[in-house]
Length: 633
Image (cartoon, rainbow, N blue to C red):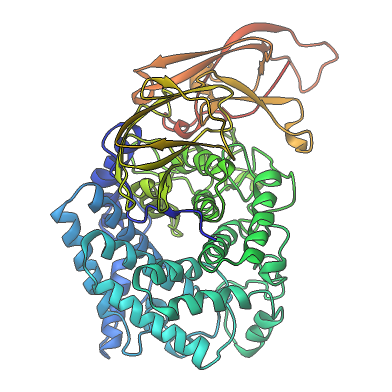
């Protein structure tokens, strides 16, 4: 059933926008996060991640565990995501210092593994007798999953197997508990399922595939499992509702699932694994469920920024068309998970909409999750911020006006690092005779099918993409749905074959040159009238970038602005603004502020120009108002 494989080890990004971000990860983000994990970074939340592993290693040896365990029950996963990001970075920019740091951390992790293969610092240090008794909350399988992903990435990047062997031993332990000993159940926080699929592809170990199938096939079949589990134990992590199966994505067998529900990150991690398994095993019923879930998210529950999970209550999906801009949750990790899901959907079926959403999530919510200097991060990504309300009053406390340096629950910062560093894996795919170009980034990739491709582009601010191709076969180039017009030339001649499902297929032989020119026209976007908070509002976009209006660029006040959608939008290249960007000048009117809360007199309006910057850049100049959506004339 597989249409194409991802480029598993990534493409080499040689210049341009993506390379600059990958260099930021390598030069700033990874060193900073390493300091955080080792509790050496100033003015950040205590992490204790590395010390937890050291203390667990002592516990395994029967020694005193020092200051014990500190942090969230899933604290181990921060180390795993850092190692995975480091692995991708090492492929992009070999660095002996970074590699030694990773090797040393892997040695510490390996020393924390129990003799039976179990690996989890929380339970090794604190509650060894409680292992596997709280699948609902305790994140044991979640932490294993992230460490499996790290092991695969590090082995592929460096050829070193130490962490992979640790996680194969851990897999053997999990297999024994759940398959041989028939423990029953499935993880409260899905993640291990997609990681097991990665382990299977890399190692060919059938137990990895069997476990992935077991957890996916079991989920939703026994709707009383978590309730029985709760009854059997006398302890809790944070009191999750064992009967809220919709929140746990366990209310129906997954092949019968119709709507995306519950915790948004858990959902898309789970759906990623479902799509991956469907492609691996040609399971059309499972893929049909994935398509329904995809439509539920992207057609009824997704922000224009590619953010998902609209409510702070449970970090979850709420209901169709409930997409309030000012109380949006839109966790950074959720958009990263949506990219994972989209990339696996592309392996089942080549549809441009999957790559469109992958691009939409990346250039907007994912990049917005990290400050431009790489040292501060958003967990939550609102589409409207008003100082004095946002981050202050009870209903808006989660929507911060500035990015913190770190979090007690620090899942998002290392998640951004690993995603940006592995961008090439999402940009390209291949099968026996075709190279697929899903996303646009300058660089070179050599495909296993013998095709070599070099891309030159200044995307996402310029819209000419030049491919120099060597080899025989076919190149499938995505035409984004947002590009109303485009031109394509092959070896200097116009190529007019129509796009099929969002892709143009171009036969190549020997040396070829393909030039794609996309539409650079800024555009107004309008929300469905089904979204109650956005009736009568519009926003502006250019290419894949959603724009926002900050007070810094609009006399300190965006609340009085109304867009003139009959007017024009001008793109202005501004090399001084935020290190260089393209801002949009939009015709608008400003409503005068009146005395009193209400008045019977119609307020006066004056014509003005509203200035917009890319959404991912907001919040980098201090606290100020921000809006993506503005009222329209």
